[in-house]
Image (cartoon, rainbow, N blue to C red):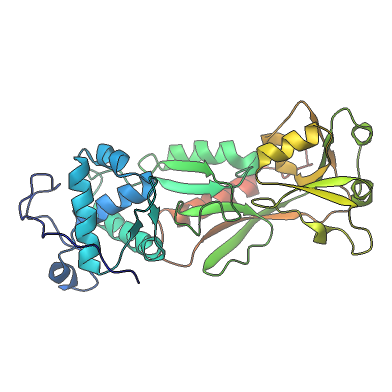
Length: 326
């Protein structure tokens, strides 16, 4: 672990301190938090910085000064004896210790707020990452029903272009991912499966067909999103793989390359609904296996609303027809 930052002790009764000088302290036992000097204000400041990725925005959210937030974060790191935030870049990034501590801090703050009852502060947002198509056709129902049933806990969907949509970096509390997830330290649950489609140039010969097979794409170039996509050459039989590939780093570049006639692509059926493009035609890919859509979270206590999110996601899938059914 990196050494904790140094600095002078915090002054008791700091006017920037929310809740006053006698605010509660949180720790790993009856007296551990008091011994370490860790209090609710430290956890709130850390969570605000973790969510905002910037001390200035975190300070605005907490209605404190920027120096006060910086001092509070530094005091927390001193108390814990670890560095929680990497300050080497303009956009602050959580360290590995910070990612692990974020879930515990969020659980502690949520438990404290819950103890205050309905009149207490609103819960922090539940941040859910996705790489390109979120919850597919269920995205809008999810957002609307969540707002109706959990108005005090905002649900934020964030598109992040990496394989775990920011989950392993600690940018989000959970992620909606497609395909198998083998990253250590993550727990996943399959929500539904969706068929795959071929994406081809709208003015090309393949667009004239009602449906396509993998072999139809193998004669030309296949565009692969190697950063957040789910398609690779293993999708084709070893003796029938594409003649050429072109790699891109995100969905936007993937669509642009296909529309320009530089190759064809393979994706989930949700892509056709969530990312229509005038230069791209989507056609059913009849011999490709379906893609599982999973909700992934870190193997830790996590955000207290994660169980509610999982339950609502399953409810929505059960109550609405899947792709291709009336």
